[in-house]
Image (cartoon, rainbow over all chains, first blue to last red; front, side, top):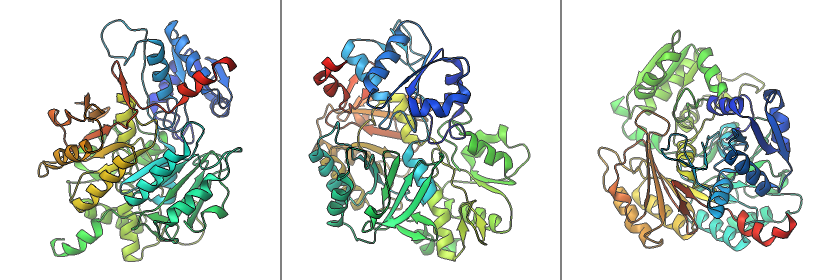
Length: 257
Length: 257
């Protein structure tokens, strides 16, 4: 289930109810700590970063044993979150899961509860940068070869997509964003608006409006989402705006109003 | 502000509070009707489809006059929603808006409240199709020339992105999805998994798991989101899964566990 960006104000009632009903809550330490006020009764299993596989395996085992388990992910569990790994584990081990309303016997019932993804939270703080077609790309080459990431960046630039960058930097990865800047400058104007949002709607939130050219001058980390505009994106006051075309159409049809 | 896919279970507390605090609620008739139980006290201004510009203009005017206005969008207001148009209108008319916490005088304060986008709601019902890089493309050529849409589809296919299709069909537009199928079959296996979700988490919800080859055999409309897998996407039972690579890594490092 998904926590959204900054809980509890951004967690949907369906997710809150699932937390309340859970016998066991499983999650990454940082998020479990932030959730503490809501976890008064449930067994809590915390784990560190990079323990994703053990965390999901444990959640699957507990669910198979008949317990009500809430496996938490920040943002949306289905976007670079825990949802896929749970299903990959089931598939690899021949475990049958099914949605709550599915008929017939299964090993356990599984509800994927969506949330506000980091890209939507970041976009809201920047104005409206995602109003037109966009591509989301993670810069983590821990699980994906850099050549694939590079190929996707090129394709996204060629398609003039707004580009959302997840995981721009970690403690061990520090060169990727510079490589992205060089690559994108081959396709895009150096003055293309770029928004950088870190810890959206959480303590320590930072929002920066800058340009592709200056993208390296601002601190980023694993809790940062970067949004690079398309060829039409502009700024107005504190806002980053990707137009969808309404106003051009509106002007043409002004006599109708 | 954003309503998420199926309100009220999927509307975040921050959005619910904004509705409660509003003096005026402005929105598209279909969504306002669904929200009725929450709108006991506020003035309500409804408008039909294709009246987006008037709706946003009215919301901006009411806000400038000092009223607390909630302009509602289903899903996430920042993804093909109303957020951008509000800012485009402000920009075109020299109206100064700023976030609630901004210092100094402005014409009105504006909070963008994010929500669960249709792509995240649809993905949750399908399993975990968006676990790796994806591109979101609207097939509506009302505001975007078809050549641009086509170029983006080609780029997304070349980059092996998971592809999310918004607005696959309307009453007046019926040929686009067939053109998309032909185009994507030039790049992708005909058996590529495709998920089709209509009215996610709302009355009349439909979830279909099919293939690129068979994509035209199922009803779609303006409330449908279609997710086309990448080259790694597979199905397992009722689920569509795009792997992120954890399990391959896990097998290599199995002795560490």
